[in-house]
Image (cartoon, rainbow, N blue to C red; front, top):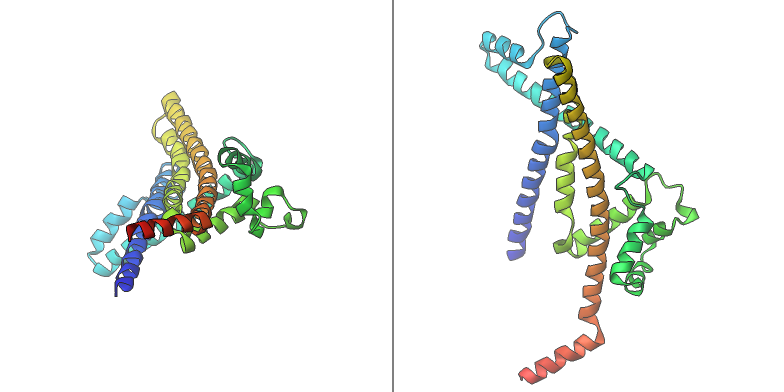
Length: 265
């Protein structure tokens, strides 16, 4: 019964996290883009009639129909979610390009492991890595260079899935959720530069637009840094889980536990 309660609580928590992620990381950025595009279309006179959301809302109100209102709300929600997913995919593609080009603050997978070995010891790290084939990607095995994705993505996903199943207390879901929430906002922030130029004329509008673009670049910089950090954290937590398991099962610790039990008797 306790197991069922725990599984139910875990499911509810996961649904709450997913709902928050969809609202903050997908729907809200998509709604911002929809508002920006409708404003740009009206200001630039791409259409002969007003197509702003406020205009459409007034027309729906004039119809005084519950069906029309429901359709309008669902339509705006659906378009916002679609735009939000597109914006997130574009931002992830830009981040992947950033990582492949190794622009700062991106780090190569081999350098991440060199830093981990420096901190925790080469023997302790390699003693765990040699038992898992996926870590051959660290040294760029020629047989694995034709893979469609970057090596760090395979290593990161392997460590994350292993932690979810074997050591859920050490998973990196918190950082993953933060990345997914923030990355969707990069495109709306960059697109807002066009809105500022059209709204605020002259040097001031151009200055604010440049600031918006710089803010979007800074967000992409931060996201790229966080994705590298997620990879490092997943690997370190993976290693810690193995070290902790080895410490618990080691003969010395078993002997110590038995001596403690005898002294307690």
